[in-house]
Image (cartoon, rainbow, N blue to C red; front, side, top):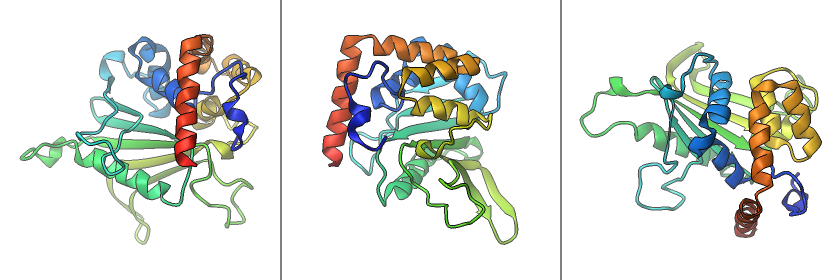
Length: 244
């Protein structure tokens, strides 16, 4: 996956981890009810979440500047009591985790205007999805060989076992660590969808897990659109060239 084969333009199905595919799945209103909503219901453990409860807004955080200190996030979703910030990160560097924390802090602080009560703060969940290892947790002999693929961090006193607040959660899903065998979790199912590259993988997931069947159908439709394919590969190549 970390090689150039993922960028092979001859591939039949575009990976959901491509920026343009991921953004389209979660920010295009056309797919809100069949992709974003099923994901949110499963990931947030809110099976009764209604379409009217979900507002998918402009992914740019409040800023007129576009640089690394004024981040653009992939997806920003507003719900009655929670906010969800999602980002797909293809390449990992030594600064990635610090950047994740900064993005989360920026989004959390951006909730209030001057003079507004802190009681208006909503819970912010940041989900950072990476295709490479971001967290090295393999030193512990009890950890799986490739490490845990999903981590959830909160503001927590590890000395006295006390949580300071439940309004700040940073989750990291590392696609390269997902085991082949399913553990039945939402993170495994959707993570495997995000990581899939071959048509057989998509078909297997759609058959085994009906909750992602519509998303697989959308990915196939997008992959069949030649203009979309061109723009998706162009964006990925530009990103890869910039990183290198």
